[in-house]
Image (cartoon, rainbow, N blue to C red):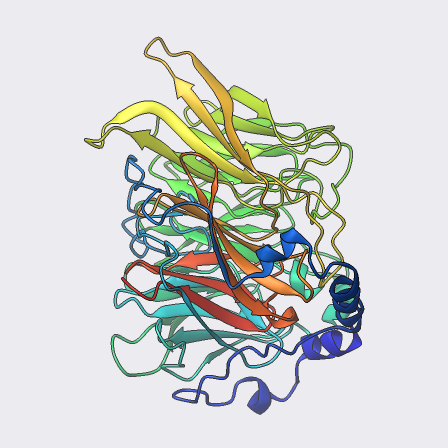
Length: 534
């Protein structure tokens, strides 16, 4: 832990942090990053469990369903935001609706290959893909931050990393450890011109152009929002953590962890704000044609802009925020990002923080009414701090059938970095709305997969992808797990690597738009998992 904390601090020498890395050889994540107690656990398993049948789970690859068993998912396409990059990975949660779903097929487990890239302690918050399919991502070692451009096949640097402002020298006094920090561009997005829109530690928004071919990442414009955040007593700082454009491309909507919701006029730089008094924001928000949807630790909102440009609250819906923060959660309140389904007459999906079980809430976008809710997971061990994946179902012709599907992961558990201990449970719930306007929701299946990562759904392959440790193995191993969306059965598990370097610790999975490739951030870099045969 002392070594990891030292690495988290990074160097204050900008040459060390931001040296030229373009075209440098890719160094893979080391398989030997093992903590002392891992040796003890490995020796115990080797002596007392040498013939345990469950050790088959430690194989390089385990297939449970035929490769062609899972089928593409018929769905209503998620609307393309006109001022964001294509719906193939423009932000942490894939698109403006925060669906965590990709049109592209993920790996189906055919002759799978794994490669990785590491530069020591540090990982990626958000991985996006530009028009050429290259990776544009924000990297951090805990204090320093960079915007990077990578080859999606080799993970080579294609340009010098663009340096972003670091956390202040006193950041440890703020009490927010690296793996809980959500500011400084960890939730940036890529716009329709392949420009990264990045909030920084200085409460500015930087617009950074990604070159079309060879070239460097270049600053286009920077906006200062430092006077438009919640003032706090030293050493604490409010943080502009999320930025998205409105549907007309006139303003950037932004939210701060301290509870400010604001708009920034892209042309003039004029700012409008509203304070959610006594509330904080800890989850990313969604934007659609009908407004901006934000969840605080108390309520879910839909915002719009009035004729004078001022921010208007269309509706506000409180939910059960629970008696306290659940084990493994960052804060009290909903742990999910806001996820949208359907058109303006569709729904918002969030979870509450109720005891003894959390509920998945289906909230009508037009008026904020909760049309259905269903409890999830085991009593007393129910909670999530990860965005749900959701979408509107369709028939074979692509027409809506009045069914909406949501997948939620159970993260409840006593986690102590770098070890997580989540309860089992990856659950699919369907909302069924009938022609007479009535709706009901029901749990379809629950898979015993465990994880604390931002899992992803592939429409193309019909699989849900998650990533976690193999606890029954003689040594620390990490697996990509694919779950069939239709049945909830595990399709396959692929060994990604051994040692703590492959720990993705609440990181996210991402799918490449060309299909057959998945990426996961880890605490020591980025790992790529792909089918060997297209």
